[in-house]
Amino acid sequence: MSFNGSKDLVEEGDVVILYIAPSNMHSLEVTPKTLNKKGILVENVFQTVYGALKVASLVGAKYGAKVDLSRGWAYVLQPTSDLWTLTLPHRTQIIYTPDISNIVYLMELEPGDTVIETGTGSGSLSHALINAIKPHGHLYTFDFHEQRVSVADIEFKKHGLERYVTVEQRDVCQTGFGDALEGKANAIFLDLPHPWLTIEHATRCFRKSGGRLCSFSPCIEQVQRTCEKLMSAGFIEIKTIECLQRELTVQYKTVPVLKLECLKSKHTDDNRNENNGKEVGGLERLVTVSHAHSLPGHTGYITIATLPPIGRRSC
Ligand SMILES: C[S@@+](CC[C@H](N)C(=O)[O-])C[C@H]1O[C@@H](n2cnc3c(N)ncnc32)[C@H](O)[C@@H]1O
Image (cartoon, rainbow, N blue to C red; front, side, top):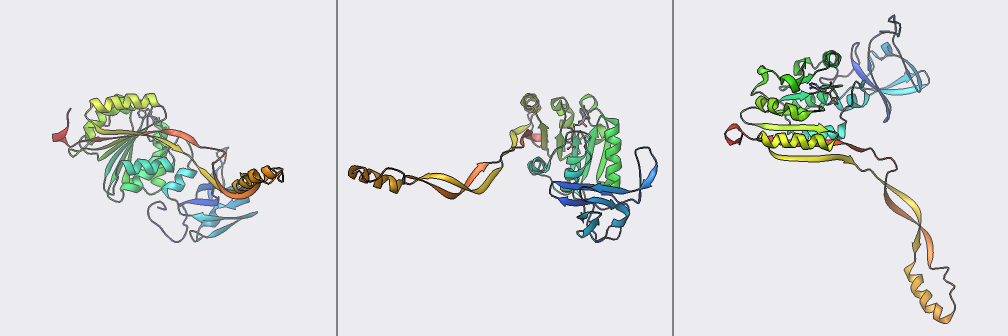
């Protein structure tokens, strides 16, 4: 229930975020017992860099409060789709929040929308899509990998999101999205190795009023094939953007500077043979801007396209 609305106190069964530092967060299910590696039920004790936490001790804690670890402390937070993206168990490559925010914006998602997504993968994007369209919208998410579908289904239920999402195992390139979704979707999102193979199936799922299709691909060759297919299927306003973050560091640095006034006086003084030139340069503390040493670099390309309303389609 904890993903779906806020509450004051941690209850048994909640999924919570244990926040130690911006780059050290964990998602935990608040259960007194857990299965160990040998499959035996044991006390649920979570180990962190600041020592152990008896997970059951979180029950009754106020969300946002400090909780004791055996050698320090952490904060217990309510989960959000963004925090889940940072802490979820990876079963595949996932889409991260900077790209997710672009995707949600470009698809123009609103509460009440019906959205189709494939593949579900680790459910990172799915949580953000649900967040954008609830409480009246619905996400239909597909993956052909049996275990990923069943784990995603369990997670959605644990997070109290089952009424907003339907997960189905299906090879969408081979069999499309099913007759029941024809004419139903406002928006469709593709994160697959062969997105172009789903475009014809996807086109049939849009409402009469049309909608937005968005595809995420790491390679430009995938983008080219997808855009070709989008053009021939009657999509318009086809645009691709590269997801590339360039972080800048603003800091004080002591740098050598050229003192032009000294230079001017040097020339004058040279004529009089009084200046040996040492005053021309100097060191100064200035605010500088440079690119960060580690760049996250390219994550992928987002292609966004519009399917016009039925009467205005060329195909
Ligand atoms: C990169 S992952 C998606 C990650 C997801 N967007 C996330 O943020 O967690 C791609 C997924 O597509 C699934 N997939 C690949 N081809 C597929 C197909 N033809 N039909 C359905 N799912 C497919 C894979 O099993 C995989 O789980």
